[in-house]
Amino acid sequence: MTTMVLAYDYTREEEKRIIRAAKNAGIKLILCNLLESPLDYSDRWDVDAAIIRPVSMFNAVYAASYFESMKVLTVNPSYTILYAGDKVLTYSLLRSANIPIPRTILSLGDDSLYAAAKRLGFPLVDKPPIGSWGRLVSLVENEHQLTTIAEHRAMLPSKQFRAHILQEYIATANADIRCLMVGDEVIGCIKRIARRGEWRSNVALGARVEPYKPDSELIELVHKALTVFKGMFLSIDIFEHKENGYLVNEVNGVPEFKGFIRATGIRVEEILIGKILEKLRR
Image 1 (cartoon, rainbow, N blue to C red):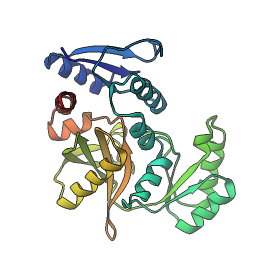
Image 2 (spheres, rainbow, N blue to C red; image 1 turned 60 degrees about the vertical axis):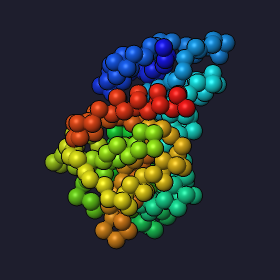
Image 3 (cartoon, rainbow, N blue to C red; image 1 turned 45 degrees about the horizontal axis):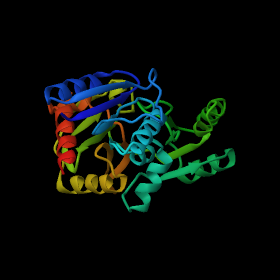
Image 4 (tube, one colour; image 1 turned 90 degrees about the vertical axis):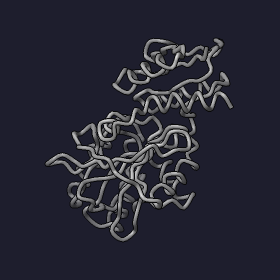
């Protein structure tokens, strides 16, 4: 019997679906709540694969690296989660692979922050390297707002939140495209449209979702991103620029998919379990 471990910190809809799918596939699934169970390097895990699902990016990276040390197939690997989870690393990796991104400037100090804003012009988008669900992502319309954001972020305890990623604001009717990849397959794409009164298109912020049919150019771009991030289960968020075409905005190494299922009806968890089993048989 195939044995897998599900490493998580909170049980969301996605984790419940994965648990059911594993059970239906006849897999012995060990549940490892990282907030309750220590990871002992002297232990020997007799499992075939580890599915990494913590909400916390750093918990996910650390858990993945731990199971990799046990020579276990890890979905996703720590490299993937780290480079997708830290947006500075994300944009650096995308840029090195000549994958198009929005115009982006990194600021690590007060003087460089205003110099970056001057280069981009207002309005612009300011976000920290770490975070999800649109938290701390700000639409900045003038220098006064930028100063207020910088002052607030300077009070946060983590130095990473004091780094500023400034980006051009792209008029997309407050929508973006999310494509989901399992294995080497694009299983589908959705369009996320921000709720009324909100400019961010995160499902966690109430965005509505609808199916989106990708063209060959978009599929090729997503495959290229998958290659450089080396993951087995990724979601990729993309803007469609009027002049510059598709631009990769973010990559998710521990993707949520309830909104994707709502829009498409595709049972992501079943495909994921099937792809892991397929990889184990090789």
